[in-house]
Length: 415
Image 1 (cartoon, rainbow, N blue to C red):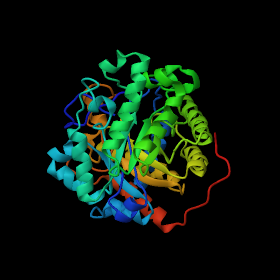
Image 2: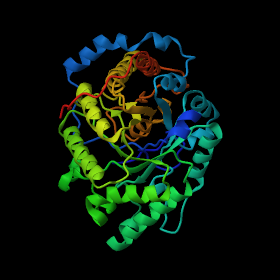
Image 3: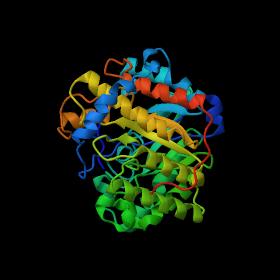
Image 4: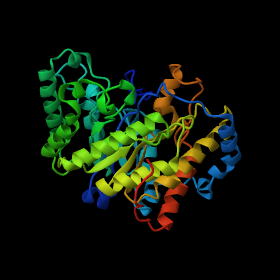
């Protein structure tokens, strides 16, 4: 899967944790960078598009009329933590930084803690500066910090690909020990392993191919969790996955793989504290929010903590008209969160950036990798940092959960 940069990221790539002190001392949090769109994409049917358009006015709740409300406190009242991923734009753009300070109680590193950003030039050369700055900002502002992502099979730097398998194994252990050890006691949650599955690679078990899988086989996941626990016994350790909300062959295969992986890790005694589900919503692909919520109920009963870690909505299949498009984006947020927030083990909702022009989709659109080059509008705030209907959908979802007692787990789950 590829990364795409935010505008201020400084390199051509691209794809939490809470300010609430009580939450921060109770437990800790984490998140990842976005993945590329699948070549197995399907286009939104005319009937589905018309149905969404007819229902679009429903996306604007009364909450949307209260733009002065802050998302972080609203989420906290619902027993959730709200935050966003952050990049170097946080320090280059004072107005954007103010948006985080008002609305976020958690920050996830966007790209600055990924292997290829920490060690782009060789095994002995580390680029700590941007990550150090993000962690220090979170500490200074009282936000919890989620480190994304220790181990990912995508985007290995060239020097790593030239090593022998024995050397790759040594680098794997050294990397986890060094990075987690450097920030021990300061990172609330680690995305220890990011996106372990990708059926398109054709590997046994549906695993994502790459240097770590080649060096260890599927056991690299348990090995990473155990080494991270040794380096920081207090951090929450998570496996973070994408596409699980899709109701197509890709989504079903990844859900199947995650079930098998979770059961195997727990049986082996691996320190798995949480699961992250990215939530890069693709309305042009098949989805079934009730089925996905059933899957969350099933895994939540086993692991106990679930986070939505990279939430946004791809609007490339929606109309050009901004008002109609924003209403459809908000409707997708609302429908997804209505189901997901009924799952009591869901503890966090994290957007992948906060404002549209810093979205990874902005880079994809500029590079011609989407259906249209128009500026995408996938996030709660526009390029002028004004709240959009998606903001209202988030706020309404948090308020709805805060008004209702959490239901118990359902027995079983849709496959």
